[in-house]
Every structure is written in structure tokens, then in C-alpha cells.
Image 1 (cartoon, rainbow, N blue to C red):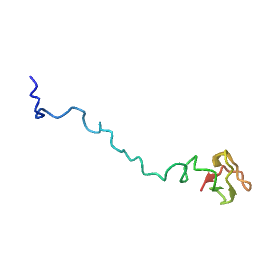
Image 2 (image 1 turned 90 degrees about the vertical axis):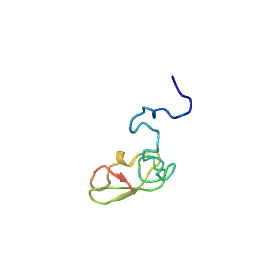
Image 3 (image 1 turned 180 degrees about the vertical axis):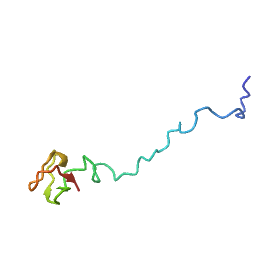
Image 4 (image 1 turned 30 degrees about the horizontal axis):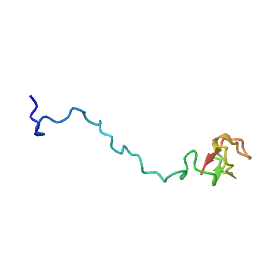
Length: 76
């Protein structure tokens, strides 16, 4: 029969079953940083030759080819 005084065994959720932060919430906020979807400003840079081009809103850098060597570009 349950005691009702809160002295029973602890809950059986097991380790890691809580909802903690899990490493989340440490970013730079909405549309900041260098990850995909980082906003309209910034540059696209070629990882091979170092050439840069202005980022075009609506076009991910990884879809752009370097104007000098043709390699896919990355966001800076």
C-alpha cells in the first residue's frame, strides 16, 4: 500500500531520461553564425583556392561554384 508521504523508492526513469538542455541553447540566436541559413549577409569562400564571392540571398554557398576553379564554395 502506498504511504503517501513521499518516502517511497525513486522514479524509474533511468539515466539520461530527463529533458535537460542536452547542449542546446548555446548558439548565436536566430539567423546568426556560419551554419546554413545564416542570413543574407556574408561571403562564400572557395576551400581550394581561397577565392571569395558575396553571398546571394536564397542561394546556399554550397550550391555555388568557385568563379576561378569550379569547386563548391562554403559560407564564412
